[in-house]
Length: 387
Image (cartoon, rainbow, N blue to C red; front, side, top):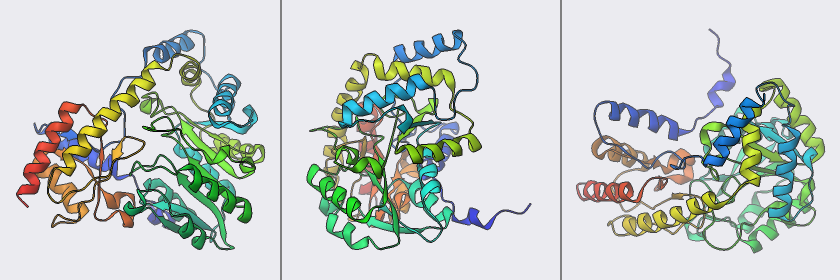
């Protein structure tokens, strides 16, 4: 069978590969502690599950509009208007099976081969993968520990050229938990207005903030014409397996992204969309409680990692990941990932899973119980002591 040469440019999400290996070890009887996969360990709130069951009984089992059911698109528009202080309508919203299609579709609809796309590195690996697969030029924006894992706006400005057509921002960020503050985002807005390129603002962790308020690029004046906001339900409502996300974008772009949906997925699951209406409009107590529990877990894992000689860890301001510096240990990031998993049954991810600039770091997801996090820290301390 002939395989397209473009497939050589398509990367992967290493978290799922590590998960497969961890499951193999579990099948052999090992007690693996999962600090690898970026998935809330809470159950989907009961009111959302009940809404899905009701939607099934009400007949939401057929095709729907490619852009999403009008009732959900309206609910999303209202949510964005309230939380971002803008004025968008349902025609600005496209609902997709998960958030990744918004990454794919917004790039496919706006970027040509050879165009330059600025993206965070280390960052979510699918960014770089899609850029390379399309034949565009991936331009890494370094995310540095000395900047508290935020962006350096002056460095960003130096990367912009006449060929820059697209940029990706992620705040709060995967894998670092870093955020972009108001002053930094305001300067980004100025650069976007000056150079007039499209920005994918990946805000999937927008509700996972531990101090202050989430700052959205969409909230700044005149950004509606340039910003594609990516958000969804997986992280906020523990709905990873439901596979539903959305993009908010200019109407002209929404038309073409909807066309891509028609050509690829036809539409997003109808009864799941009805459950998401309940997610947005129903009680928010459980999502808030999840964030508070993540805060407690963050404090435990940060303190524990900083107590291990050779490891230092900053306190993330959002999401549910830490990105500790392991440059004081005598092995590479990938070697440490394999060592901790194979020898001590702790599943983590190498920083290089998120880009070349992640060397010297590991990513730990603290979407696990405090007891398991403490046990993992004990195992890592023993492992480090034997290096």
